Image 1: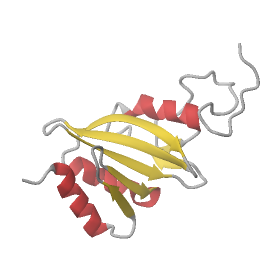
Image 2 (image 1 turned 180 degrees about the horizontal axis):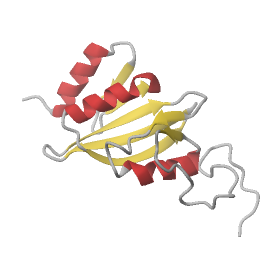
Image 3 (image 1 turned 45 degrees about the vertical axis):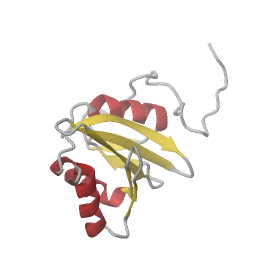
Image 4 (image 1 turned 60 degrees about the vertical axis):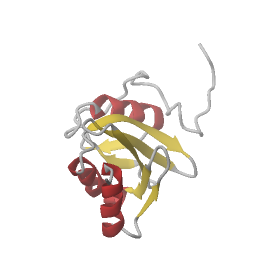
Length: 145
């Protein structure tokens, strides 16, 4: 019997053969560019991954947003790593998943990634007058309290 993720991966490989990379291991991850992000997210939900576990960011050569989705019915989890371009923008998921609201604000605050369509994108951990994004590699700590 096929798992949800195998069915999803097969569909995505057929639809986007050159635009995605699927890393299959104990925590399977779909790696993609933001151009197809919204379409892939719709497929993720369509295939039964109905719970957004978390959103974070990762800075390697460039910034990426990392999402983890869970199927509550099948207890299966997948990850999505969306590589960002220089604009550092990605569509907000806060309309489909209410938990995305606060998580996107945290990623915005710590990494400076803008979530287009977010209803209230503002800092959540740092003060409004804080300069910079503390989890970016280029952030320089000038003093400590």
